[in-house]
Each structure stands twice: as C-alpha cells, then as structure tokens.
Image 1 (cartoon, rainbow over the protein chains, first blue to last red):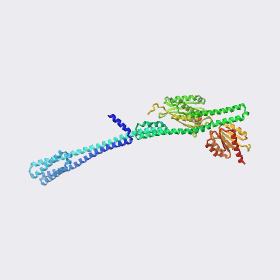
Image 2: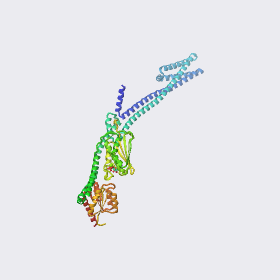
Image 3: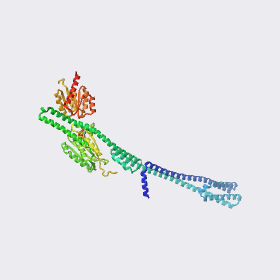
Image 4: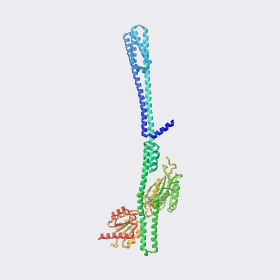
Length: 488
Length: 129
Ligand SMILES: Nc1ncnc2c1ncn2[C@@H]1O[C@H](COP(=O)(O)OP(=O)(O)O)[C@@H](O)[C@H]1O
Ligand SMILES: [Mg+2]
C-alpha cells in the first residue's frame, strides 16, 4: 500500500511541470494559512465575547456591590429609602440577567445561571418581606446570607472568566507563533526543494552547453533519446531543446566540413599547381637547354643536365607523396593503447637524425597515465612531423622536451613538444597550420602541420602552438582520455 | 657600358630558372643580372635602374607582388614580366593593374620569354624616340 503510493507520487513527480509543482506548493501553503487564519479568527471571536461578558459582568457586579451598600445603609440608619434603592438595583440586575439570559447561559452554564437568578430572586423577596415587617430579625440574617452569596458568586465568576481569557490569549499567542514557524518551515522546505531541483538540472544543462561549446555535439545529441521517458518539465524541455540543437549543429558541422573540404580542395589544387609548376618548369627548361646545346655539350655537362632533371623529378615525387598523405585523411582506426609507448616508438623513428643533428631529448612522463583510444600510426605521424619541424628549427643542435601529463579535469592527456629552436615570427604564426604554408622554400611542403591538425581533430583532440622568436616553440596536443564505461 | 644595351633583372627563387635564362638572354645581346632572393634584387635595383624586370610571383621572404610594386613605384618606365608557377585570375588582374606588361605561366618555353622581352624592348625603344 505504502509502496503503491510512493510509486504513484514518483510518477506524478515526473509528469508535473515545475510550474504545476510550484502552483501546487502555493495552493498547499495557502490552504494551511487559510486554515490557521480561520482558527485564529474563531478563537479571537470567542475571546472577544468573553471580554464583553466580563465587562458586562463587571457592571452587574458593581450593581451588586451598590445594592449591598444600600442594604448596609438600611441596617445602619434604618432609612426606608436605602431599602428601596437596594431593591431597585437588584431588580435592575434581575432585568439584565433576564435580558441576556441566552448569552449568560451559554457562558455560565444553565446551573450557575439558575443559581444566580434564584439567589437574586430570594434576595429580592426577602427585601420585600423586610419592607413589609421591618422589625422581623429573621429576615435580616437570611438577606445578608443571600447578598453574600450573590457577591461571592459574581466575583468568583469574573475571576473564572478572567482566568479563561488569559488562558485563551496564551494559547492564541502560542498558536500564532507556532503557525508562523510552521509556515516558515514549509516555505523553506518547498523553496529548498525547488532550488535543489532547479540547480540539479541547471548543472546538467551547464554540462551539456559546455560540451556543445567544446564541439562534442554527438554526445549531447544522444541525450534527447534518453530523456524521452524521463522528466518532462520545463527544464526537461530545455534540455531536449539543447540536445536537438546539438543534433542540428552536428549536421551543420558535417555540412560545413564538407564545404571546408571543398575550399581546402581549392587551396590544395592551387597549391599543387604552384608546387608542381616550379619543378616542372625546371625540367622543361633543362630539357630545352639540353636539346638546344646537345651538340656543343661535353659528356660531363650532359650528365649534369640529366642529374638536374632527376633532382627535379625527385622533388615532384616528394610533393606527390606528401599530397597522398594529405589526401589519405581517412577516419582513424581507433585502438585503446598506452600513449607513452606510442611516443617511445615515434622517437625511435627519428633517433638517428636527432643524434646527427646534435639534439638532446628530455622525456618527462608520470609513472602511470590513463589509456587513450587512438590510431597509433596517425598519432606517430603527427609526433614525427613535430620532431622533424623541431629538428629543422634547431639546425645547430639544441634540446627537445617531451612532457606528458593529465589535465586538471582528468578528461584529457596533454603532450607538450618543446624545442629550443629559432621560433616562429608572430606574423606567420596564424598560418602554420594552413596547407602548403611553409617558410622553408623548396625544402618544405607546408603539409606536415596541416595533416597533423586534421588527424588530431579527427581524434576529438586539440593542437595548438606557442612560440617566441629565437627562444623556441612549443606544440601542445590534447587527447581525450579513454573512458571505459562511457555511460552516464 | 653601352648606352643602347637593354638591361634585364631576373628574380626567381628557383636557381635553375635563373641559371638557364641568363645565358640565353645574354646571347641575344642583353645585359642580364639574376637573383634568387628578392631582398638582394631590390637592393641592387636601388643602385642600378634596370629596363626590364622578370620576376616570379610566389617566393620566400618578400612576395613577388611586393617586389614588382616597389619596382614600379621607383621607376615606372621599367617593364615588368611576371613568370609564375600558378596564376589565379586575381593575381593576374592585380599584376596588370600594377602595370605588368606580360604574364607567363610555368612551365614556359624559352622562346616565350624571348618574345615577351622583345615586346618590352620595342616598347622601351618606342618611348625613347
Ligand atoms: N618547431 C618549429 N619551429 C619553428 N617554426 C616551425 C616549427 N614547426 C613549424 N614551423 C613553421 O611552420 C611551417 C609549416 O610547417 P609544416 O606544416 O610542417 O611544413 P614544412 O615543415 O614543410 O614547412 C614551417 O615552414 C615553419 O615556418
Ligand atoms: Mg614540416
């Protein structure tokens, strides 16, 4: 039974929007406040009637006292007028008692009212009897007795009601304080609840928007399907909207990538044309010269011509090979592996050249690194590109630092490749990742960094550069850590 | 130095181009100097005004476009012939706006260079009269 209720509430919790929940909470609080108000109103009303009664009864009491004073006067001076006065006062009170009969019965109970009425009547009849035969001592004592009883009773009643009033006031104050506290507590609780619910969801939203900002559209777009059977309140709707947006962005990004590919194809073609144009022109000029001067050339000179032509052909070969690397930007074949091993392997590839170039390698890896999911060949290619550039920047020798560490958030592994070479001019810095951008003339292709950039991007990573002229250059690669159970 | 002899400056970062062009133009009776670095070429041009300049467009260091702009500013009567590995419509347009006489795409035949130079020579001689 209890379980059923819990499940029902849980279901309701999912179905209701935050606005409905807030309305519900407001309604609930309003009902409580209304109930308390009605209760206070009723209590105050009884309180007021009691106060009124006490006031009235105070009046009656005064009449009683005056009646008794007149009675005493009569006994002292035997003035018949005092007797009449006492009688009139008593009669007046009797009239009052009769007039307010209903109210008085209600407050005093019938029994007490009757006693009061009865005693007063007795008193009055005794007064009349005394008036008729003033010498009769028998009546005087019973009159005193009745009078005494009346004043006693009225004082007692007033005291009793005063006590009651005090008690009610005390209760009401306590009541008001307690309800205020209760309302405050209820308010705090609902407020806490809503702020908890909202912050929890906002934090989730923040996470999502962060992911969107970092370009991880895919993960965010998946949330949409997950949320279907989940909470459908306002924040849920926003989360769904963000997720949808991410999906759209993902689509757009793909389109954009396609467009960019076309643009870079244009850059590529013009670059290729230029790159190939020069050696082709050289071959053309050499062969033209060779044919023109053939008869006058010595064997040695003929050989030199052919060697030059061969060199230019090699140059074309190199460009074409790099171009193939560039065009082979296939999807990486991801495998979980240890980054430090990949780095060691890549270093082994250039070990000899480093030694010849008089470059000292300084490795700095922590003892244990989280795994990464990468295409080993591609990442090696990136690293070798960076080493090659570093070597070319340190033609007179130098130091190559390779630092690997985990980011503060533990989500990324960071590789820093730093050289002590010539550095990069701030004006050229923004262009170094462009295809065919090179400052090395015919010795460079300008494809190394462009290819590397593409590879790292395909690994959902980042590559960036910092450089100071004459001091050196640092390339920073960020790769996402492999998460074993990618569920959340 | 013979006054009637036409002087030519050749700038291309490909040594083979300068090496091949120089003798073939010298044989035609021109006074030829070659450079592979634009900075050297511009310094030399400041010392000695050439009648004809042959330059590549895309090179290391100073861009060929910048070089020919400076040349035209210093000496507007110098005729400029551009040789380039790859020409887009934009670069061709820009060159002609700057007053370039001819625009040759690589690979070219020596005869094409000779024709362009002859055209430039004729223009210079016409203007002298
Ligand atoms: N470590 C470095 N130090 C100085 N300059 C660098 C370094 N790495 C790259 N560069 C600059 O970036 C340019 C592009 O590099 P890259 O794409 O590898 O092409 P390439 O090496 O063929 O010129 C280089 O020509 C060079 O100017
Ligand atoms: Mg390189």
